[in-house]
Every structure is written in structure tokens, then in C-alpha cells.
Image 1 (cartoon, rainbow, N blue to C red):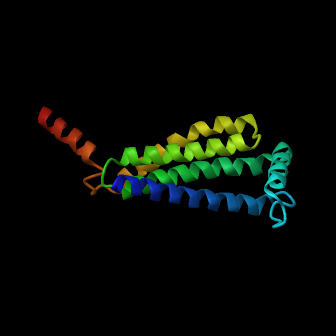
Image 2: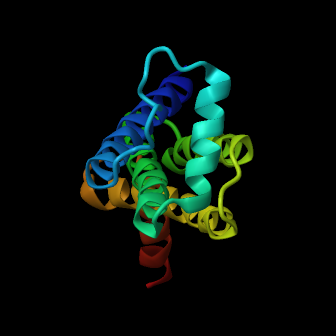
Image 3: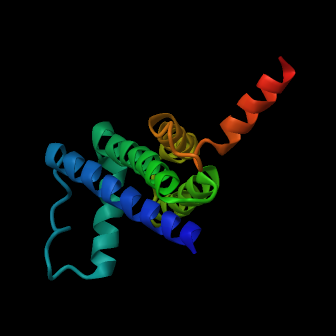
Length: 158
């Protein structure tokens, strides 16, 4: 059960991080007209976004890619930190879920090809988040159990 909750907390952290970076991007690059109108139907929103993606400035499209990576890094970090089981497993599940959500978003709207290619950085960002957890929590026996085993094997060799 702990593993499930660590992945859940990791995904929530990832979502918060993605939202924060995307809001920063929206502050620098205004979203298209009519998107925030409460009277706009879901079909109209889809058309507005699809049209915008065809002519959006590079920076406006770069921010979501940055947001996805920051989200995966944060999610992997938090999932690994929150688990008492296998931190890498929790991080990979979190990164996999975020990758699936990103793929759904890319499928839902016609994104440029380079954004599809940028998705390959999501799992490495997740691994980096897990590794940061391991590096920043050197006294946590759960996070360092594999490292401790390696150290004890090296000591036996000497």
C-alpha cells in the first residue's frame, strides 16, 4: 500500500510542478483568445487550441516540454522519497504515468513533431529525480540498501 501512495503523491507533485511551469509560460506567452471564456464549449476550446498550436511561437511550445520534464523530475523525487519500498520502482511508475498523460495530451491535439521527440527526456528526468532523492538522503536505509550491499561486497573483497 505504501508503494501505491508514494506513486500517487509523486504524480500529484508532478502535476503541481507541471502546472506551475505552464502558468509561468502563460505569463510570458498569453494563451489564445477565447480559451478562458466560460461560454466556450469543449469543441470550441479544442479548435482554438488546435489553431493556436499551428502558429504558436517556439517559446510558448517549449514551456510545456520544460514543464513535463520538471514534473517528472519532481514526481520521481517525491515518489522515491515517500516510499519505504523500492524508490526506483516508485519513481519509474510515477514517470510512466506522467509519460502516458503526456502522450494522451499529444494525441489529443496536433503538436509539432519536435514535441513528440522531446518526450524521450521524461524518463531520464524521472531517474534524475530518484537519484537526487538517494543522494540527498544518505542516511535513509531504504533508499541506500542497494548501495550498502555493494559497499559490503567491496569490503569483503578486500
